[in-house]
Image 1 (cartoon, helix red, strand yellow):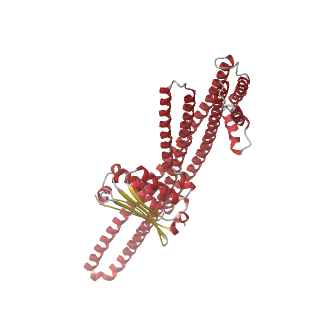
Image 2 (image 1 turned 90 degrees about the vertical axis):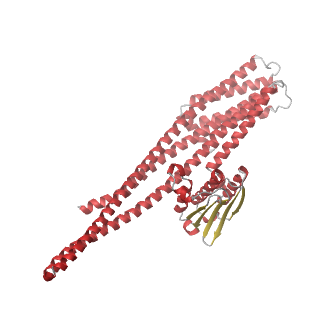
Image 3 (image 1 turned 60 degrees about the vertical axis):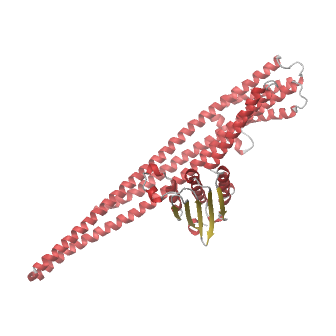
Length: 495
C-alpha cells in the first residue's frame, strides 16, 4: 500500500504535464482558427481598400475629362472601375484564384451579403453615370445635375464600403480579444504547473533533509551501541547476537533511506528536464507572438498609413493654385507619414526580421549589424562566417536574438565608441563574440542586485545558449568594456 502511494506521488508530475500539454494544443488550435479568420478579414479589408481607391481614381479621371484636361486616358479609368466592380463580385461569389474563395465565405459569415449586393449595384450605377458625363461633357460640367448625382453616388459607395469595413474591423477586434483570452489561459495553466512542480521539489528537499537527520541519529545510535559493547565485554557472545539483530534492522533502515534519496535525486533531474522543455516552449511562443505583432504592424498600421497618404494626395490634387498654405500643410503631413511608415517598418523588422526567413541567418546578422551602424555613433568591426547550413531554424532564431540583445545592451548601457562582432567556425564548434570599449560593469555586483533592478537580458541570453547545448561567458570590468562570448557545438545543434 505504501509503495502504491509513493508511486502515485511521483507520477502526478508527468500526468499533470500531459494534461496541460493537451489543453495547450487545443487552445493553440482554437487560436490558429481565429488567426485564419483575422487573415480573411484583413484580405476583405484590402479588397475594400483597392475598391475605394479604384473608384476614387475613376471619379477623379471623369471630373478631369469633363473639365477638358487633354491628358486624361479615360480607358484606363474605366478599366480601374471594372476592376472595382470585379472586387465586389469576388466578395459575393468568390473568384478563380484559390485565395479569393474565403472572401465570399467571410462576407456570408458576417452577414454582409446584402450590403455587398448594394455596393455592386452602386458601382454599376456610378460607372454608368461617369460614362454618361464623359459622353456629354458640355451638359454635365461642374455644378450640373449630372455632376451632383455623380458626386452623391460616389459618396454612397464610400459610405457603403466604410460600413462593411466597420463590421470587418469589429469582427477582427473580437477575434483578437478571444485569442488574447486563450493565450492568457495557456500562460496561467503553465504557471500553475510551474508552481506545482516547485512545490513538489520543495517537498522532496524536505524529505531529503529528514533522511540526513535520520542518518545522523542512526550514526549516534551506533556509537552508543559500541560503547555499550565495550562495557559488557564479559557478556560478549550474548550481546553480539542481540546487537547483530539491531544492526541488521538499522542497516535495512539505512538502505531504505538511501533508496528514497536516490529516488528523490532522479525526480529532481526529471523536473529539471521538464522545466527546460517548458522554457523552450515559452521562448518559441514568444517568437510566434513577436511575428504576429510584426505582421499586424506591417499589414494593418502600415496599410492604414499608406491609405491615408493616398487620401491626402487626392485632397492635394483637388486644391486650387491659390491654396498654397493648405498645399504646404499637405506636403508636411505626407513627409510625416513617410517617417511613420519607416518607423513602423523598422519596428516590424526588429520584432520579426523577414530577412532571417528569406535570406538566412548570415544575411540577417549582417543586416542587423549594418542597421546598428547606421543608427548609432559606434564604429563596428564585424567578421561573420558562413554558418547557415550548420544550425536548424529554431536555433537560427535563438542565435539572432542573442546577438540582437548583446547589441541592444551596447546601445542602452555601454556608452561605447567602438564594438566588435566576431563569428568563427573552429572544428565542430562555432564561436560568437560581441565586445565593446564602453564603461563596463562589475558582474559580481550586478548578480547581487534585486531581480527588479538587474533585469533579465543577460540571464535570458545565458538560458537560450544553454538550451542549445552551448557555453555562455561574460567578462566585464568598470571602465574597460564588456565582452560576451558563447560557443555552440555543431553536432548538438543539428548541423
